[in-house]
Each structure stands twice: as structure tokens, then as C-alpha cells.
Length: 276
Image 1 (tube, helix red, strand yellow):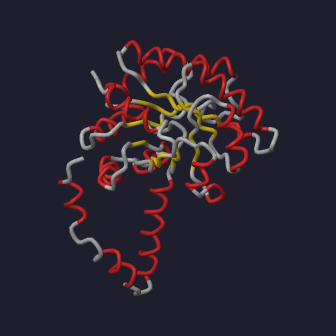
Image 2 (tube, rainbow, N blue to C red; image 1 turned 90 degrees about the vertical axis):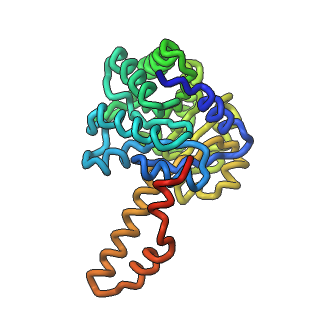
Image 3 (tube, helix red, strand yellow; image 1 turned 30 degrees about the vertical axis):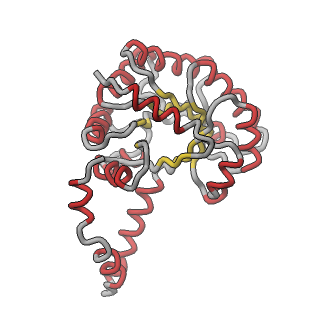
């Protein structure tokens, strides 16, 4: 049994430190080790990144047993709180959701992101439906004796990008908090004023996705943000840079290749042998 309530306690404290903590989302044990060695206090997976490196599209298309195996292997190499992006829970049935939470706990997770839209759906789950799923996830963790951290993501802004969406965000944030969520994640929120308005009303930590329009961490602190996620951003950055080097090599330009390849000659061995 995953008995990591001390890690959950540390993870909770990060959300109440008075300033945002950055969560560079990972996709496998090696990327988790990289984040841990860099000094970040927690590990979070990104669904699209985990799916992509295992050759699956996003949207709960990666088999759940593959996801849990990734979590188990990450847990074997880092001594950090691990929160898992489980999208909407890999199953519309409550009993399946609860079993999936138990499996993630056994794999080493101390928390999850859970979304309020099912894969392929054109709209959101109703408040009643999603609150029931959050409560069920909490219940499953309690049955395992685990103080679980639930980050409730809402896709309101994926479906309604207008200013009127604020009221829907507020309604869902309050409802998810009352259903047992520990943090509210209004993905794609991209306006400092709207973020500050939301954090000032909601009595719970707020998580945002780092985007160019809200890329100033100091300003996010002023807005009361507790947590800043990168989503698949780190993997995209690495892939794009590798692609750029490969494109240059095709033309015979080796400048970028040698610049990056010679900067840290022992970095791979250092990461493998590092204690985290």
C-alpha cells in the first residue's frame, strides 16, 4: 500500500506557501529524475506527454495499465510527491473511477488532476455528475487510508472563451471545493485580472497553466495563484529543439548539435546516478 501521507502533507504545504510553485510536468522516469535533480519539490505528469512518448494520442487513448506502469516506474526513481493527470478518470462509471484511483495510489501517486469533460464530448459533465466523481475519488482514497490531493480541472474555457465564462468558473470552483477538491484548475485562463478576481473569491488554491499571456510568475503571485503547471510544455520544448538540430544537420550545419552536445558531457550518467 502507498503510505505516503507525509508527501501529501508536503505537497499541500506547497499550495499554501504564499507564492506559486512551478510544476514542470513529466512523462517518464528519466524526465522525472531531471525535474527532481533540478530541485523541483514535486512531480506531475501531463496526459498528452505520457501518451505521446508511448505512441498514443491524448484523450485517454493510452491503456490505463500503461499509465499506472509509468507512475510506478517514476515512483521508483524519485522521492517526491507524484500527482497524476488522469484526465476525466478513464471511465464514465463511478466504480471504475474509484478503482482507477486505487490503482494510482498503489502505483505511488499522492494526487490527481481530474477533468470535467469526457474524451470526445462536446460539452462538460453536469455539476452534479462531476461533483459526484470528485467525491467518489476522495472516498476511494480514504478507503485506502491515503490523504489524497485532488486538483479539479475545469474545461469551461475550452468551450466558452468569453468574459461570461467567469461566472461558470466561479460556480464550478465552489462546487468542486465543496465536493472535496483541494485545488481548482481553470485551464486556459489567461487574464491576470480574471485570475485575481477568482482567487480572491474562492477559498481554495488555484492552479494555472503557464502561457505567454500570463507568463510573469511575480504577477501570478500578486494574483494569488498557488500552482503553475507547464502541461506538455517541457516535452514540446525538448522535441522542438531536437527537431531544429536535426533540420540543421540535414543541411550540414553542426553548430547547434555540438553546442548542446558538449555543454554537459556527463549529464546522462549524472542523472542516472543522482539521488533524489
